[in-house]
Length: 114
Image (cartoon, rainbow, N blue to C red; front, top):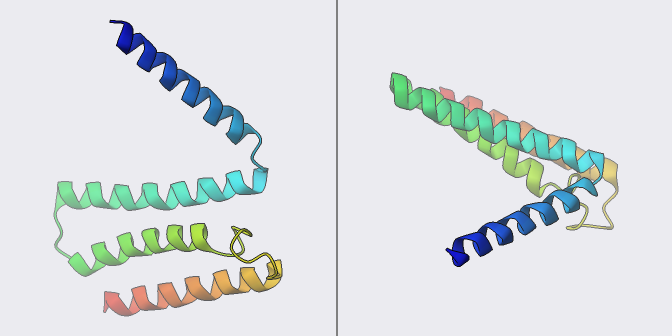
């Protein structure tokens, strides 16, 4: 019995520390977190829909999911969104790289659709 209450207290302390650390996060990064979360949520909705209805246009399903996941990965790994990777890169150049990578990703996705 003592072990489960200790585990609950540890989990509560962990959530409290995460919540307090996230409260100190700048608003720009919170918006980016929402963007990435929305992209992953959209991919999960597509997977659930495919599981319920079927996967007749499988290329369309793969294109939609890969587009969502690719967008989330590019948003998370972009130098524009995470200045820890390249501190000497100007924000305008990093944003241009992010836009160009998204353009290439979506051109490949559109090509995959057929």
